[in-house]
Image (cartoon, rainbow, N blue to C red; front, side, top):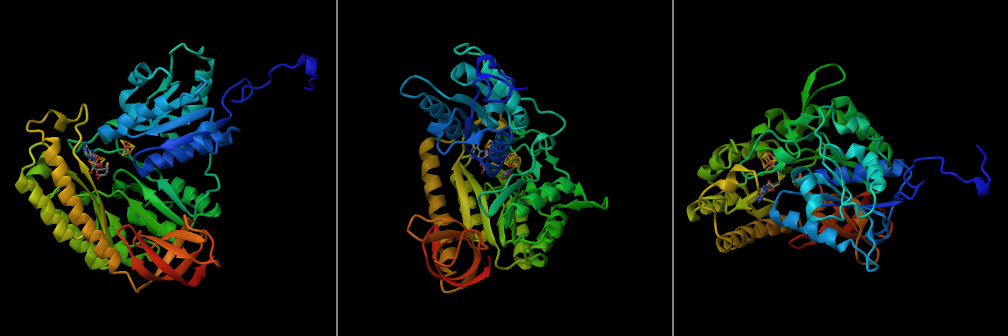
Length: 465
Ligand code: SAH
Ligand code: SF4
Ligand code: F3S
C-alpha cells in the first residue's frame, strides 16, 4: 500500500515500528553454554531486524544472561541492573535471562523493578513475544513479562539457522540439563533434566557453522559425554560417534568437548582421542574433591580411585593429553584430612589447568542445610593452598612446551600492535607476531617462552589459511 506523509499509519508490528527496541546488547555470565545461548539470542534478534549495539550504553535492549552457580555470580547481576540507569534517569529495556531468571523468576522483578523481562534458559526462543509484551506494559507499571517454562519440546527447533560467525572457533550445545544432582549444585534445577539434541540437527548446525567460516567447534553440555543419539542410519551413537561424523566435515580442523562427568567417560570416547586427529588433546574432567567421604556427601557417584583409573585410561590412549578439572574447597564437613586428600589427588592427576572455588551454599540444594559449614577463613586458606599447587602444575605444563613446534589456530587480535592470539591443541593461549598471518589461519609456531597463563610463539609456517 502506498502512503503519503499526511496519512502515515503504522503498518507493521516489527520491534522497531512502534518504538520498540532497535539495538540489543547481550552480556553472558557463567558457563560456555550461557555464552552459546547469548549468541543464539542475539542471532534471533538480528534475524528479526534488530542490530547489535557496539556497547551496552548504545543499546535500547540489554539482556543480562545470568549464572546462579555461586552467590557472587548472583550478586553481580543485581549490581549490574542498578548500573543500567542512565544519568538522565532513562534506561534501556532490561531482560534478565539465564539461570538466575529460572531460579528466581518473579522475585527478580520484585527486587529490581526496572527489569522488564525475565526469561529462563529453556524459554528464550520466545524473547520476541516477551519484548512485545514488555513494550505494551505501561512504563512504571512494575509489571515484567515473565517466561520460565521448561517446555517438553526444546527451544532449538524454534531458533533461526546459525548466522556467519565472527570468530573461527564456535560453541555448539549438544546436550543440556543434568540428572546427577550433586548436593551443592543448582544446575539440575535451573537447566532441567538431561536432554540430548538430535544427531542430524547437530551435524546440520556444525555444517552451517563451518560454511560460515568456523574451523573449530567445541561441543557443549553440562554432562556432554552423556550425549546419546541415533545417527542418520538409525544406529544409536555416543558422543564419540557424533565427533567421528563431525570430523568428516571438510574445513572443520578442530573438535573439543566440555564438560564431562567421570562416570560417563566411556572406553569408546577415550579411544576416540587416539583415533580422531581433529579431536584435540584436552579433557576437562572435574573431580571436585579427593576425599571419598566428601565425594559421597556431594553425591558425585565416583570416588578418588575410580577417577584416577579413568585418567590412567585416557593417558594410555592419548599420552600428551592436557587434563583440566574443577574443585570445590570447604564443602560442609570438610576436615583438614579431607582437604589433604584433595591436594593428593591433584598431585596424582597432574593438571595442565584447573578451576577451583570456595563452596557457596545455594538455596534449595541439600548441602545448604548440612551441618558443619566451613568458615570463610578456612575456605580462603585452603583455596590459596590448592591454587598454589594447581598454579605450579599449570606453569610446569606450559614450561614443558618451550622449544617445541606446535600448531596454533589464530582467534583474536592481541593488545600489542600486530600481535595475534591463538590456541595450541592443549588450549594454551599463544601470542605471535606474524605480519603474513590473519585471524582464522592455522599456523605452526615454535614456543619461545612460557608464562603462567600464556605462551610466546615465533611463526614458522602457515598450515592452512
Ligand atoms: N557439569 C559440570 C560443571 C557444573 S558447574 C560438572 O559436573 O562438573 C561448574 C563448576 O562449578 C562445578 O564443577 C563446581 O566445581 C562448581 N560449583 C558448582 N556448584 C558450586 C557451589 N555451590 N559452590 C562452589 N562451586 C560450585
Ligand atoms: Fe552440577 Fe553435578 Fe550436574 Fe555437574 S554433574 S551440573 S556439578 S549436578
Ligand atoms: Fe551458571 Fe547456569 Fe551455567 S548456573 S554455570 S549459567 S548452567
